[in-house]
Amino acid sequence: MDHLSTFAGGAPWFVGWGTLALINAALAQGKNRSGLLWFLLSLLCGPFATLLLVLLPKVRSKMF
Image 1: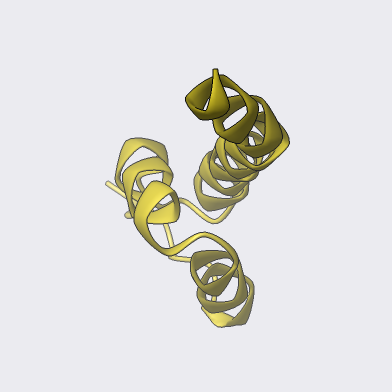
Image 2: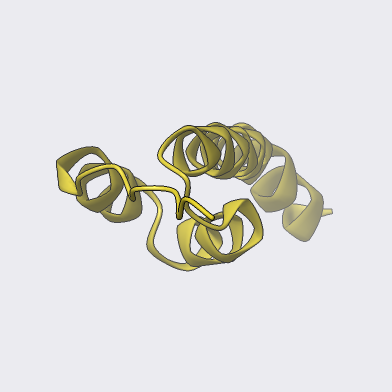
């Protein structure tokens, strides 16, 4: 039974981390960057990926 209380206590962190990854993916797409790449990076790095993404400039789109 003890392992269930540990999982339940960690559930808010799991949901928050996943939500942050989704937000970062949307933010990345707004800066013309890969949403999938930043989603995966955010799952690993969390708030540090957010900070890096906010500080990076927007990528210029190529004109044909």
